Image (cartoon, rainbow, N blue to C red):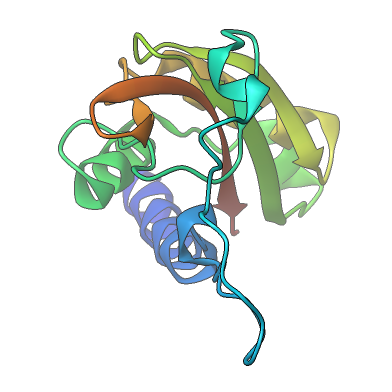
Length: 155
């Protein structure tokens, strides 16, 4: 039973890593021939609003220890619900959450779910994570940043 769970977790982590596309990897480049504007204008009033949730920042939030540590955490803490296993439910649950300036998480929700039992387990694992290294919209200025994480469940 433990070997099957370990196999499930390893497959899920491989899928998570291959499917995860950090938001900061998206290009903000202007089309060729167009004048380029700064990524975040200095006069942007949202920078002064502590409630604003950023989607593109200079430094994305990071799980303590990086991607490998996050994979290890998920593999150690993710449990494939028996009800989902018996119904042969599998796939990817996409969870989004806000990493706060202090590294805590808030607004954890399922963006794309499979079944309530798997969705609840994905949320449970994200809520169990330790504090993250916060993202910064400018050098050393922590910000609230939206983060999206796919978590795979494989039989």
